[in-house]
Length: 616
Image (tube, rainbow, N blue to C red; front, side, top):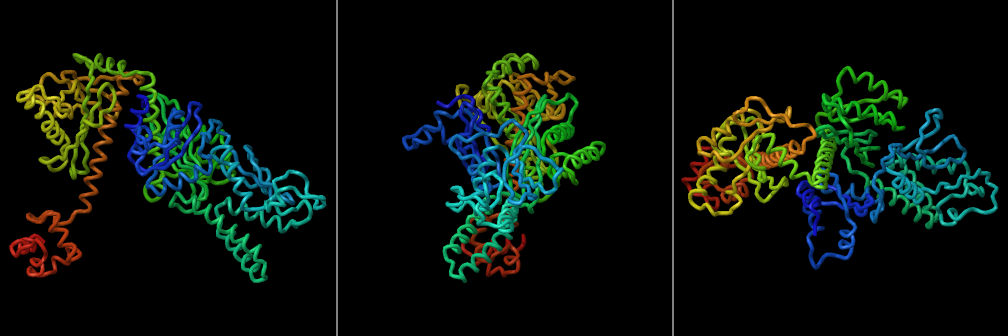
C-alpha cells in the first residue's frame, strides 16, 4: 500500500524530464534513475503488477523518501543520471552531506614527483598548488580519483621517490603507475603525466587526446603495436568520459548558480556547481528569514554566509535576483578577497545561462513544495488547517472541498482559466478543469473570471433543479470557492453568484503580494498568521491553480504559434489544410498559385478555392 505521504507528493511531482533519487530510512540514496516524465515514472513504482521485477520489489520495501532534479530535456536527464551514477554508485549510495567543507583534489606541482590527493583545506600561500572542485561528497571525489588512476599512471604512494627502490608496487605491474620509485620514469616523463591529469580535470581533453594520438601513431610506425593499442584504449576512455559530462550548453567556465524559493518564514536555497561547463553537483539549504526580508535580501545573506565557510569561491556566481547597489560593491570585494582574484556576480536575462538559472529556480521551488507537503502530511495538520480556515473566514462548516480559480493570459491573448480542487486538504486532480475564454477580448481579467465562473456554476444550478441526486464530480458543490486575486476579483465573482442566485456557497479571494484574504461584507483583509496551517493550505491551492492555468496557457500559446492563416478561413479544416500544405509547401506559395491549381487539391472545390484566394 502506498503511504499517504507518497501519494500526495506524487501528485505534486512535475510531469517533466529529470533525474530522481530514492532514499532508505537512514537517508541514503538507494537508486538513481531518469525519466521523460518524472511523475509517471515514480508512480509506476507503486503500481503493483505481476511483471514487477524482484529488484523493484526489494527497492520499494526499503524506500522511505524520494526527491528529483528537473532538467530541460530527456537527453540532459540521461547525461545527468550517468554523472550521478558514476559519482554515487547507485545501489545504496550516499546523499550529499551537511558538512559544507567540500573536498577538493589537490596537486602540488612544486614536488619532483607530484601526488594527487584529497583535501578540504585550501591555502593560497603556495602558487604551485592546484585545486579542483569542490566535489559534492567525499565518495564522489574518490570515484574521480579512481577514474584518474585508470586513465593516467601516476603514483598513489606517499613515500619519498629516489628511483633506487629494489621492487615496485602492484600498481606498476598492472600498468597503473610508471614506476618512478625504481627509476623506470624520469621526472620529465612523470610530470608529463601529471600535466595530462591537470588538463583532464580542467576539462581540456583535446590537448591530451592530440598528444596521445601523436604517440600512438609514433608507436605504430615503430611496430610497437601493444603500446599503440594501449594508447588507443586510453584515448577512447578519455573521450567517453568527457562526452558523458556535457550536460550544459554553456562555454567552458567555472561558476555556481543560485536560486531560492520562499515560503512563510523560511527559504529553500538551491546551488548548482558548474566546473568547466559541466554540472558536477548540487546542494540545498534551508534559511530562516526575517519578517521584512525580500528574496533579494535572503539571497544576499545566503551568499555571504555560504562563501564565508566554503574554502572555494568561483570566479562567477549566477543569481536569480539582482543584488542591490549598496550591497554589491561590498559583497564583490569580500568574495574577491576570499578568492584572491576577481569575482563577478551576474543575474542573466537571456541565453543558456538564464535557462540554467531557471532550472535551478524550478528545483528550488519543487524542493520547497515537497518539503511543505511532507511536513504537512506527516504532522497530519489537515484538520487543523481546515478548522483555522473555517474560523478565520467565519464559514458555516469546515471547507472539505475547496475550488480555486485563476486566469492566465498575455495582453489578453490565448486567455484561459483553471479550476483546481482540494478535498480533505489534498489535491483531487481528477476534478481539475480547464477553460478556454471565449467571449472576452482584450485585457479584462474580471470579465474572464466571470465567464469561467458562470460556465462552471451554471452546471451546479441547473443540475440541482433537474437531477439533484447526480454525483458527477463536475456538479459537486464546493464548501469554499477561492479566487486568485484581490478585492476586485472577489467583486467580479460575487456578481456571478448574484446573477445565478447562489447564496449557499462561501467565497473568498487571496492576494499574492501580502497574502491577504478577502471575504464578502468585510472591507478589511483577513491576515492569517504566517505559520498558520490554514494559510499554508490556501497558498497551496492558490499556487496550484496558478500552475495549472500557466501550463494550459503555454500549451495554447504554443499551438497558436504553429497555426497559420489557413485556420481562419471558413470551410478549411485540418484535413484540407494538410492537403494544401502537402501540395504547395507553404501559405506563400498557395497565395501565388491560381484558383484552378488550388481547386485541383483533394477536398477543394472551385468555390472554396476562390474564397481562399480572397482571404489570402
